[in-house]
Image: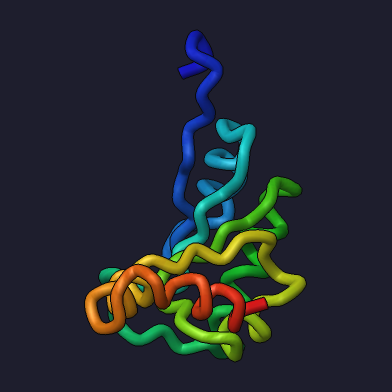
Length: 114
């Protein structure tokens, strides 16, 4: 990857140990992909003190930007993580909107998150 000026994107999961968080952080140059919960994408994420604790552990392991993934679907979720991550990855909700309302609805959805 270095040969092609690419950076690996590694995952910090809620179940990752503090030692492994620091190890993974030592391998990354761009940003850290933080998984909001155990499970699969598209399921309900509890935006709770437990998530904040997990993000705190992530932040303690690196100064790199944190990208939160899994369960972000509306402005309230963005407000909850504001100041705790630099990036919100919104996948399943965007796919749901495209499926239900068409791709033209994405611009309004994204504007509503700001």
